[in-house]
Image (tube, one colour):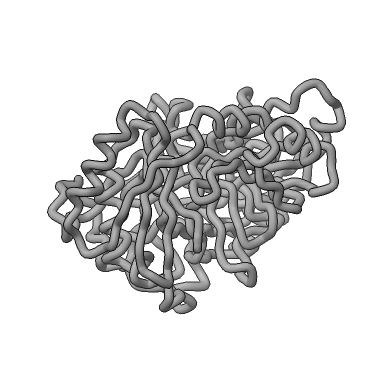
Amino acid sequence: MVALGLATSVAGVAPSASGVDVPPASEPVPAIAPEPDSDPKTAWLFGPEGRVEVEALSVAIGSSGAVLGVDIDHEARSLTVVVDLGHVDGARVEAVVAAYDGPLDVDVRVSEQTADRLEDALRHVEQRPGDAVLHSEPSASYVDPVTETVVVITPADGAVAQAMREEYGDDVTIVDGRPHRLGGGRTADLSPHWGGAQIWNQQTGNPCSSGFTTYNLFGVRGSTTAAHCGAANAPWWTAWTTNPSYFLGYGWGNTSFPTQDFQWIHASGPTYTNVIYTDPGSPSSRNVTGKADPVLSSTVCASGAATRASCSPVVTSTNASLCDDWGCTPNLAYAVANPWSAIATSGDSGGPVYTRSGSTNAIARGLIVGTAFGNDVFIQKRSTIESAGLTILTSP
């Protein structure tokens, strides 16, 4: 049994077999080629046709907050939509699921726990009430719709785990781990600069990854990366040299860090375009032609400069948070792959998270900001980046 969920916002997907009207994508979703390491056991849902159905059903259900998530059973090839107990929109969601007549086996159940209670526990983890020890311990958290608990990834014998057990008891599930932000590739990237390149901060020496090209309110282009990678006004380079050919720009920082973990990089000399590195798969690069937030219960690709591209992580939460001695970054997406998969490591922060569209294009979903176990990734959402006055570039 795998804990998964439905989308709260979706843009750009192809029409589904169930007949639900959905906005067209820049490229047809069924043209997506499977990854070489894709699992035949999950292909019924994570293959092209399944992705179209999940996104279409997500759009039909909407974003009212009535759905805690979806329980997916790969053995039975079935989905169970978990509806929040007592939510005013619950009956409508149940009706939408009952009316679904597509190829997927979809059922619905009402939760025994309220979303308000779980959200309260989730915010409690982020606020770290009144204890310096709590602030010094790392944690990451998200609501699991299957167990109807808040999953907290943190040292199992630490103060955060103890405090959450005492306050919330069975409403939390403690998973032993040390989540952390990632501080290195596609080396020597030249103008026009691409996303997913190795970049380094001249002030701190930190290696990170470039994200999507964006433009500000005046139409001026620049690159992006994680805010924790370097301070404002510091130069960024795409090779371990200060040769002007490899100058990416100056980091603008982010005064909202750690609430938001991204920053803009810009200078008047370099140029930037809507292409990202996607090796070692084929093709080795893709054009960014669309953008949308991560969709729960779908697969995404993470393409940091150190680990490079992997398209096996499955989005299991869009309300996750990552907390460390910098503070907490809420409203993240969280995706996890099989335990033996390498998804993110040091040097990947700031790299693009995307979904494939057609044979050569990509839909921007967000930026890599951290990991707990290496086979997972915390994602700064596309909508958070664009809420700060930046727009992801989707044409040359």
